[in-house]
Image (tube, rainbow, N blue to C red):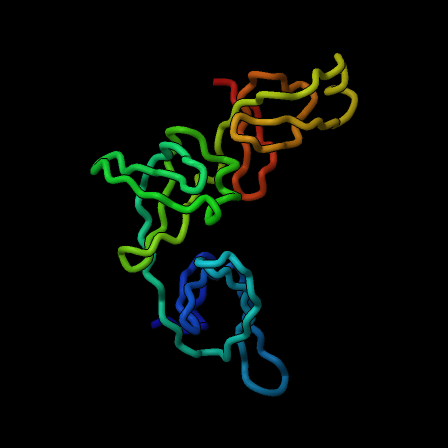
Length: 189
């Protein structure tokens, strides 16, 4: 059990039979009445985000989520298959559960599989940034990248459409944030 006074961003809790992760929280002490904690919670089963207000000091159950490192193998239409590289155990996750994450996942990428109670798979945790290859973009006009901070659309090898600077060309490797899908830098490796 954990007190609402001890909430931290990213913490997982069980509330009203559902598993949530704390996205945001704020302790409020009004002039009249008791203190409370205003939270924004993401349901780990459905992905829905809710706002909920807890009275200050209320105890809620902590959800134990195990993160197992696995590598992406392939997608077979309705499911995505990951493999534990130490035990060679394979896990299938419905594509509908991780549609957003699949924009950043390519063959061999290491991710953490989130497992509740040892058997319920809740989804995946991606690295903060991934390196993707640009497969389709228009050519920039010489001098465009020095005049302004112009951006153009680029399609990556995973199907992600991202805004990139004008100097990025087909075949370039770029670093993309998995949090919001934005361009971070060119990968010069």
